[in-house]
Image 1 (spheres, each protein chain N blue to C red):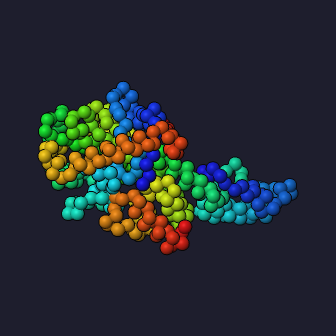
Image 2: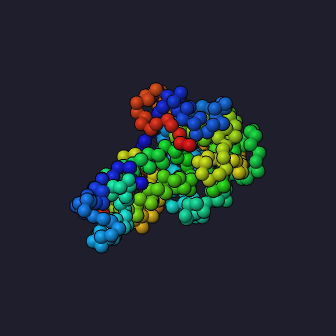
Image 3: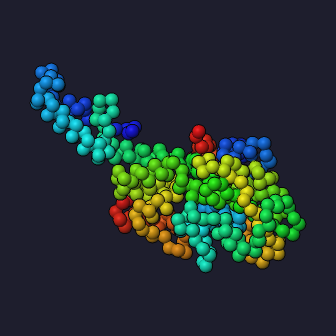
Length: 161
Length: 206
């Protein structure tokens, strides 16, 4: 799930267990420890971690930025010829980025504003949806330069960039 | 303003990737790639705004807005263009002396694109999203799959027309000639400056 994750350890190493003396099906202590491990893993998975190939992985902040960048580039490339906001917003990459906001909303808003500033990708609707705000004046609607400035200023005011 | 000019060969490849019908068609790239305006604004003869009947886009006051944007229908566009003197004329895409036409494309999701007929009937002018605007011979040249996931324009849904006089009194002709002159000047100055372009040619991935 996470392409660039930070491998912490296998569950055993993580709890600093000595694997040799434990008989997993007979020892009560081992059963208790396994239950504790399962509980911790479930808790971490709730926070966005995943267990893959015996290793516990947690998405780092840079991983989120990389995933955002990857999807944003794909979206920009594949919708370059489209004018309809409906078509552009229905693109799977746009939806994937909106989904990323559930992991770290503030970080995604920040990345959107930075991408808007640097690459002029149109995140206006997504930004309004995520922030429940719209800093664009009615008279500036549709004017790219002014709309970008309005969101960049909004980001500065909210200490995002 | 973000304008980038690409040499014809590379830019044509990018268009053909996205509109396969253009591979065997006659088309000319008229402008640099520009994200300041899109097809609807270009059909209105504007190059400084993005028009759509939804929040965050330029749309005349007093006309209905589609909020959320996916509720936009062709009626929104017919009403908008009636203010510019256009009237529906079915699907008659032929050139009529004394008239200018615009075509509304739609797919299963709704309106996707608009093309404006060249004033002298040389073809149709289309601004493709953030890409440049092109002059293509037929409306079919940029038609495509109707499905929502296809990222295509679908088919021509309706055609509207107005008289040349109607275009003249609204200064549309003047704005179009001015835009054409600016693009010609831009091509003259920036010809074949490929290094300014940073977006890869590749289109949608399968």
